[in-house]
Structures are given as structure tokens and as C-alpha cells.
Image (cartoon, rainbow over all chains, first blue to last red; front, side, top):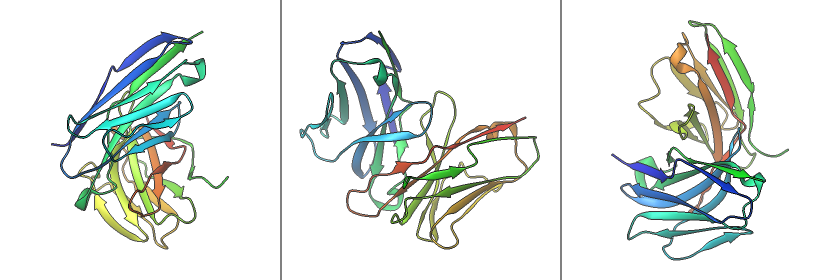
Length: 113
Length: 114
């Protein structure tokens, strides 16, 4: 059965710290891996990754995919209290299940001042 | 606001009642998805449409659930004879079918069944 596993499930850091969130997956017909940020409402899109080894960056956030080892990491540098949220990892697949995203349970990040 | 919108944002109902939720996708997006999210879990796929055609349904979608997208624009999700286990956040997302599509989510409808 296809699955996505995120770790840790929760994390508490102080402002200025750097954090690394992990996402591993086991899926057939992998198409892409997506990261979302969820703050008490709808998930907001962060990154889509399709190729191994190519880092995507947006400000203090960056992410990379390893298709051989079947995992991705999301890095946040110089964390701020506004980064507190649940970070969701999801995988999309080719074929009949295309668009049917499989989500992990999320990592709840709390950034203390 | 040109994002995905959902209505209502919150719904409280009694067990056994029927409820209907609406989703308006981003205007040029031809794919529309419904997910359900319970506390401490990631969203779980329910169903999706490409234009007006419903292309896939999860086994989570029991026969009490029905979704429509009659004109290929907005969609409705109806739950009949609600049960307490239906309490969840119902999320809608839309995307433009390309080789690298990204799904954009609406604010969700939080359902509480008493």
C-alpha cells in the first residue's frame, strides 16, 4: 500500500534555529512530491519536487528530493515565530491515481520567541 | 480574491441530517479535488473531477457521500444521514491539468456532527 511517513511528528525550537523536516515515501508510479504549510486552515503550497538532487529554495525555506532513497527534506533556516505550523508532505503518482495526493500526517513545528 | 473558495466555513448538524458543501475552484482550473482531514492527520483523498467528469472515488466515499460538478465549474459535496464519524474538515483543491500540476487548497468546511 502506498504511504508517506513524516518525521518528527512534532518539533519545538527557538527563533533563529535551523530545522530539518523529513518525508519518506513508498509509492508506485511516483510523479512528484509536494510540501505544504498548514496554519489552522487550508494547506498552502510551498514546493513541488520531481527530480533528484535539485534544491528548490524560497527565502529561508529549501527542499530537496532523493528518488533513490525515497525521501525528501524541508529545511527552514533562521526560524521565526511565523513559521509555526504543520508542514505536510504529499506524493502524487502517474496513472489512474494521478492527482490523488497521499499525505503524511505532518510535522507540527512550534517556534518559541 | 481569485483563490479556491468554500462555503460554508463551519457547519454544525445533528446526526441523521443531510449537509451540502460548495467549492468554487480557481477559474481557469479544470481539475477539482475533495479531501477530508481529521485532527492530527493529513488530508485524505475523497474524489476528483476533470471538468464535469468524476474520474476517481476513494473507498472512503461511502454511498452516503455524493459529489457533483455539473457544469465543470463549482462542485458540491453532499453527505446524507450524517454520522458523528463524519466530523472533519472537508477541503477542496483545484489544479490546471499540466505536466506539473500543483493543487491549491480552499479554506475548508469544518463539519461537526452532534
